[in-house]
Length: 402
Image (cartoon, rainbow, N blue to C red; front, side, top):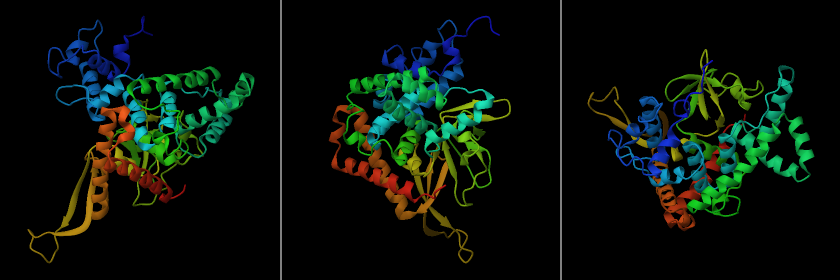
């Protein structure tokens, strides 16, 4: 045991500190400048490792919160720097205004930013606690949506009095004080968003047009914020592969780790399909990595339309009857997200997805640059946002049932 607690700069993620350094204009310079973030943090009494600082800046650039060369904050970065949420979780909330489920996303964000509302039961009660957790998940295969369901039920039961709420917490193995703290923190996030110019998350409007119950939109919001924390596996696999090619399993604290859940078993999808899971954190264990705060992604469309850099290229092949330098094109195209995830699609569908993605990016940029004019998107941008709702909902309903 260490004789003292290490500095918070060493044991916590640095993304929020980097955002605050820029917001307070403490570090106007770029990556290698003497007045940049790495140079500034190196002057601390217990400075963080330089690699940790670089990783934090890389993540912020990847999120679109910071310019790659000058390290200046983008419009999204300014929004995130004014929120008391981890940047990826903050982006999930901001993106949810475009998707149309801002109330649900802000509740899920608070649940992800605080410790789990579930109590740790003794071994003799583990099975009953797992069963209660699965019931609260309502088949969502998502820790974030499970927390959302818990908060909804908490609000209903609390109207009967604190005694009823405490009894319900005991029966479902929830931590009474943690749940109430998460519930109270919801108001903080709403106030921060309103201070930026966003409409109140609890009010009805275009930002809540898709409600807070449809998993298609909830999964899309989670995916848009937590990317690149995505893993996949194929038929017969037990473990998942992450973007950095690490093998990982679901953490035991996740609802998806319960033995009755599909993600805890061998992958059962068909040979031409891939099973995706979104996760909050990757934890290194003694044997392998585990994923916390997981959500099963039913359709890959949120990855294509809301995440990373989407690129497309046609497919050519050399016919045995043709000259070796002569190629023939076919009506297929390859779509890639950050040159990592690769999808095959018909050329017409690929073109449509690329056009829709560009218009959605334009709408997101307009929204973050001036949140007060969110409802005043151009007709083309608004049409793209409405199309996104139709596409996400259709893709979710068309996915094979588990």
